[in-house]
Amino acid sequence: MRRLGAFVAITFACCFASAPAHAGKRVALVIGNSAYQNVAALPNPANDAAAVADMLKKASFDLVIAKQDLKSQDMRRALREFTDQARGADIAVIYFAGHGLEVNGSNYVVPVDAMLERDADVEDEAVSLNRLLFAAEPASKLRLVILDACRDNPFDKKMKRMVATRAVSRGLVGVEANRPNTFIAFAAKEGSTAADGDGEHSPFTMALLKHLTTPGLDIRKAFGYVRDDVMSSTGNRQEPYTTNSLGGNDVSLVATSAAPPVAAAPPAPAVDPNASLRRDYEMAERVGTMDAWDSFIAAHPSGFYSDLARAQRNKLTAEAERVSAAAKARAADEDRARLAAEGAKAAEQKRAAEKAKVAEAAQHAAEEKQRVEEARLAVAEAAKQQAEQQRLAAEEAKKLEQARLATVAPSAQGAGAPEAAKPAAPAVAAVAPSETRPERQIPPDLPLQLQSELKRVGCKTGDVGNDWNASARKALSLFNDNAGTRFDARVASLDALDAVRGKQGRVCPLDCDRGFRASGDRCVRVACDDGFVLNANGSCVKRPERERERRAPAAARRGGKCFVTNGISFCE
Image (cartoon, rainbow, N blue to C red; front, top):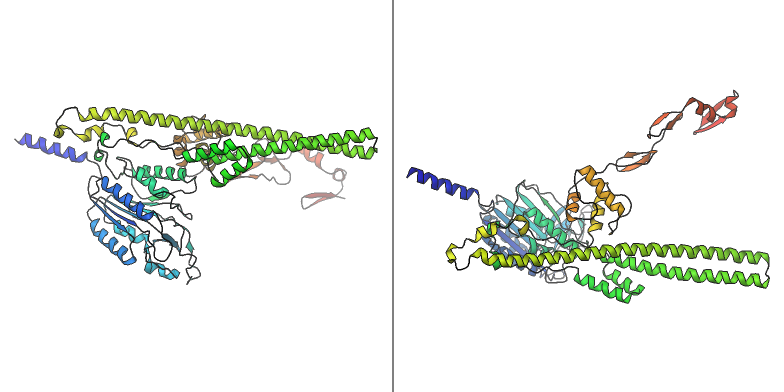
């Protein structure tokens, strides 16, 4: 019996030891403020908060408190009550959607009844970020605060400044997560604002709904996917910002074992976020006029397809300039021939000949410009085709994965087996981590993003663009040599982008031309003292005796007196 008791005790200990770190109590407070009383209402925060609350409930959170359109007193009461609810919890999540503002380096979220007639009213009428962090403080393993509140400050224009040095800025200011096990997420980085969105939800919340409760996904990785989705859907105009004080272990909101059976929740079909953008581009391409490309660029000012549209427009401009230059050259040549035939004065014929020569040179320049623009467009079109092939391959892989999961799910349940004898958790646990991770869509401007990051770490020189040319391949090869990585330099990849983004400072050493030396992040000219010259290694050495004699003024060689003023030698 003693041996049996010891065996049972060891078995229970192993089971509890292998349980996920976040299998304990999880609580959440979700607030969406839309119906502002003293400024224009916001359409999406109420919808965003309702969707986030529903997501957390489906993730089997122990408690989800959903609040909408809270006044100042109600918001403070809700935070006070949530502090008690978070006591003894492993994970506490606070989500706020609505208006937020930054005053003198501190962030605030705004209740719906706030008036904020003066900057001094912020402390009384708004709620500080520190107050939200304090409400989540009792949680032991993760305190997560999410702010979809970086919109334009509607109170700024009418707010009176009581203290001249107090600054009221757009968006929210970036802060550091000073408390342990804290994670703070902003919809947009410091000094910028977040889009409320044209659809049912803001771009930031749409990405949260897609990635945040993925079973077993570390929260830092989840918000990395959120960042990529938001930048892709907003044309790189909005970039979320996060800060955390988490340790080295993975922290996820939902344990892998807590995921429902695969058959109960089949993966959603892949959605192409650029479908509408691509249709607009194809329409402009069919029209093919300057006005069509100008309209497209005005509607989509940045991104991969915008660069393609500019290349198309530049090609049309170069063609028009070539035609005009050819007409001018032809007219100048005809004028020259006419004057020669009429026996005009030599001076007139000479002027006509010079004019024809200039026009011919302009024609050659226009033709060369057209060839250059056509070559650039060909490169851009090749990049477009490559991106399209990658998109189609990703969609095909998604379909194959859905088909595989559809066939695996029934067999995992066991045909005809009793319901009580079907352990769902082992079937999900058998899926490899790479299969549970959501598939990242390849952004159409991946070459541009990777080149920008390579330039930031000092491996790329010159201009950056969305074509993966020889200069870009050389830059990635330099990064591999200096960072110890082995990425394929022939293509731009998401893995390479993640690796370069992970580097904080310069990776590739600064390479200066002869006669220059590295000083920080730039090259400065090497200046040698009088009597010294620059050698082949770029160092200052004493000038050879014969050269000094040869360079000495003739008067000095004859015994005359010489002197130097402002670096210039004078001899008597």
